[in-house]
Length: 253
Image 1 (cartoon, helix red, strand yellow):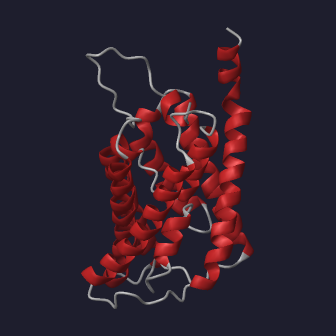
Image 2 (cartoon, rainbow, N blue to C red):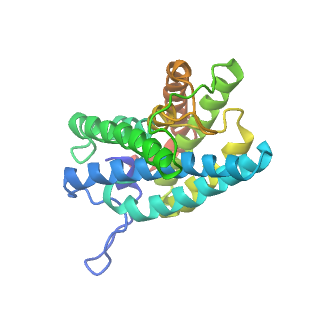
Image 3 (cartoon, rainbow, N blue to C red):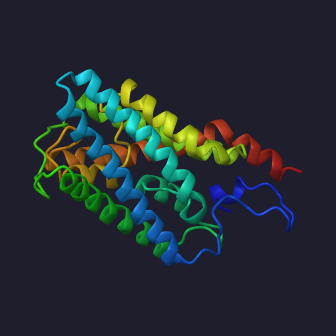
């Protein structure tokens, strides 16, 4: 059983589920992941461009960028969560596949690959769209170097915390709070992590296509993506450490 299924309470026919329906056609789910990731990156990049055009104060730029991301992400999860689970993130998709790999209803390798491809394509499209909306060159490789060791540590922390939050919500039957909880966490991680919390390989790739406030130099991508995957593994280990007593207790009944 996958993480989303575990979070579903028992319902009657009169109580429709609000979580991801397992029978939703793959095409619809992939489309939701593509559109959602594109919109998320458009929000991140577009708000960064807008902020730098309105003020030279870096603190205000980061505040504007983080607030726009919080509101945009919360809306997107609320809107598209019932279709695809609103992953918008290869680390979350891979974690979902891993935790549900023994469940016939869980994400299979084909679905996982389709999700990840849609997320990457959507992220690139979102960055190009943001540049177009502000009259910038559609593709300008970022020159914002983010290869320092302390930034990579920040990405490990940001990604591990995100995975712990999402799968912890699923383990405790609180996944319905994901729009607020995930958006709030990302907003906070903008400020408490040195990397400003990318926590997402697809979004990182998309942000390499724009030389703006939110960009990341292509040369910094391998390091960022590598530590994000490490953070995902660490996050799942923390989920097992903190929440698996619930599964063991249920299995002993």
